[in-house]
Image (cartoon, rainbow over the protein chains, first blue to last red):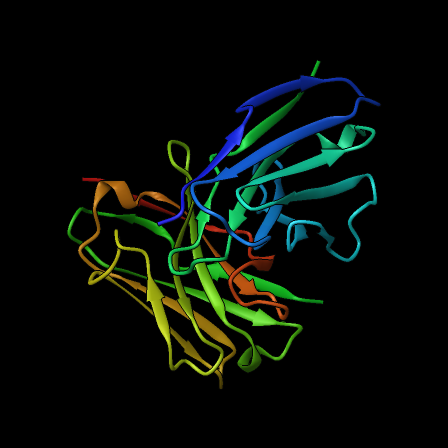
Length: 108
Length: 120
């Protein structure tokens, strides 16, 4: 199984900050990576897929990059509604589908 | 718009059974693969099972293999998860999720989740 490791596990930032979250796969996943945002008590929401493709309706301040085993999610200018938990997920080698453990983004 | 509405969660004793349902609307249900994903405070998000759009292929996480069964009814636009031999560690919020059109193994829509608690 492919293991996904996110860093950091939690992060404090301010509105307007640029934030980067990293996801590392235990083996190459050929850009088969999705990012989700989850707010408390709600289901996850798809932000990006194929490592860098923005899902329809997602603000352009969210972007993704990477290759091989290392990927990043960047929020260019944090907005109040962006404080949430973020998960990466690989779909290169399935089953099983595997998620990172999550990164909690908190207000500083 | 796409809607996924889960039901069937509740409290069950260890060793018991439960069937979850997910009513789908707003898209052509019979054209998309569907998944169950669960979430626990301790282990985060865990993929549970997948069923292909036509029901002909099913995949399971190792920790539920032999105990859980995923199925779908295209006449009712409904996805199911039959859960048998439940254990305390199966306690979680269970989400149904729609496989994306681009690739069926990531999720473009999720339901609101249904809580399953396994406890004596």
